[in-house]
Amino acid sequence: MANVTSADSRTPIDPKALRALIGPRWEVECVAETGSTNADLLAAAVDGAVADGFVRVAEYQHGGRGRLDRTWTSPPGAGLTLSMLLRPRVPIALWGWLPLLAGLALREAVAASPGGADAQPWLKWPNDLLLGPDQRKVAGILVQVAGAGAGGGMAAAVVGLGVNVSTEPAELPVPTATSLAIEGCSTDRTALAAGLLDHFDGIYQQWQDAAGDVVATGLLLRYREACSTIGSPVTLELASGSVPAQALDIDAQGRLVVLVAGEEAPRPLTAGDVTHLRAGSG
Image (cartoon, rainbow, N blue to C red; front, top):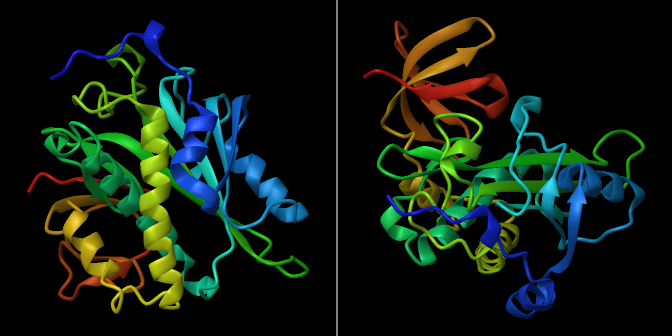
């Protein structure tokens, strides 16, 4: 386990360097502090103020939320917190793939960074990146949709990511979390943001060009190969209570296919069906 980065040495993200690395595809705005980068872009999307490819990065986010309205916290300058505004040309029924594609891009960006491959990055369905031999959570993803209801304009998706970068052990919110620094990875947030946006752009354009067909593009296969949930015993937290199951696959709709204990046939679950997914006891 590597020595973690001191809080005093946290270098702010360099907007000029970031823009030079990513080129014209993305329009990036960096802010010192905000309540939530996702909330900022959702409001702008409803107003029609921003186009596809707008990115907001915050050094500190004091009102960040995760899936199911869980809190996401990170000390100032210790994480990578950003949101992307997208207006996909793919049918909205397939937008459930966006958090999976963002996770795939983040995993590939971390793996390509110094020390990243050795940290064993894996995806936990539907929206977490895990690192290290104990597979602790280093990042979460939240996708929200705006303008899809009656009377709304062109629908937009806001893809938000929060990554623990230089977070020290005492700063972690839960024992099951970790950071890039703890796992011996690079803590250059400017380079990580650029790598993430570059990897996501390639995946996103593939997905759009194929009208959301994750089978033809090979994106389903890439996700399956990156997802440690597949083949693992899990415990599902459902509305009806906790049930043990075996995770079997991810289907073409991005659903987790499981065999629940006591049932004869596998069944698919959407992210909305599961309030929590944790490793089972085998």
